Image (cartoon, rainbow, N blue to C red):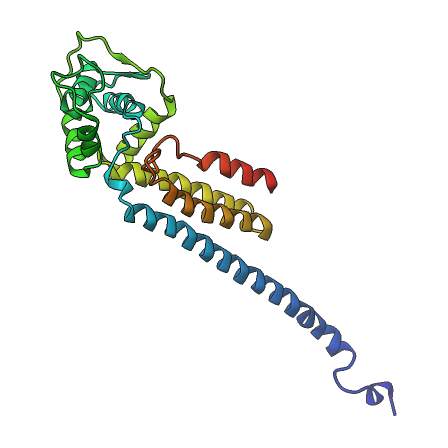
Length: 249
């Protein structure tokens, strides 16, 4: 009997040819499990993100400003509206015509800004009325500009808040909802970039989920009288937390 007759069919050359298929199967399983894990984590992150959005709208943050204090955003709002004029006012300056219009129509804080100063209760009622505030924004943006008046300078406030208002209104329109949409646009971009960068690290993605859980509870906390809305500059905790998560990864 020859060697070929003694050797069972498929035990030598055929087995060597088939071996790559046997080795490829475990690798395929690992790859499939990796894709499934990434999909599950992405779905969990998306759900946590959506919970914050839904909670924000259920609390009405898209329909009000905050009155603690009004000066923190009134001047920045006037600057943002001044940048939207034609020609726009450059730098962190506001057209006095716009600032005076806001002050005379319910946002006056100091003597001389309006004929009759509104009471704190009247200012609070105004800034928490979305329809009235949206109308005030639209009217202030259309007020005739007197170039003879000295512009208003920004004092005791964050420069970034004026930029935030400007880009929110420029992208999403002149309404309070634009401030919420812009906030969550920034958060969504940040979360997406974090996920793409650290998608192979379950630990980093777990940190991201913990952050979004904390953000959900922070949205509820933002409803207290000291903050009132997520677009309050005191609430903007997105950047520090994302940097902290990145430092651990």
